[in-house]
Length: 87
Image 1 (cartoon, rainbow, N blue to C red):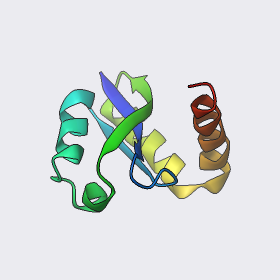
Image 2: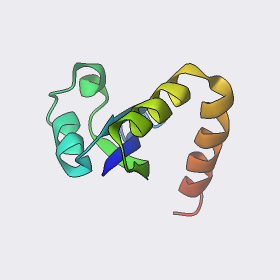
Image 3: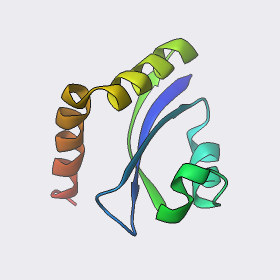
Image 4: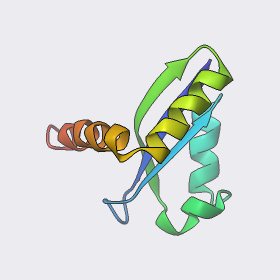
């Protein structure tokens, strides 16, 4: 199983990281250990969203579409942010 995921910085709550992996627990641990250069200054990070895919290709395509297009990221980020209001 492959995953597209979104992490949120608990330090800067407006900062999000979008990625894909085949092991969510390991990848979140790598991010929080500072092993991922692009997210190391925003630690600690929290997993706030993910989607599961059967193939790596599908997960990577989803990641690319979310990163590339504001028309994809904007409604997704609104859904994610709305869930914070319910915590």
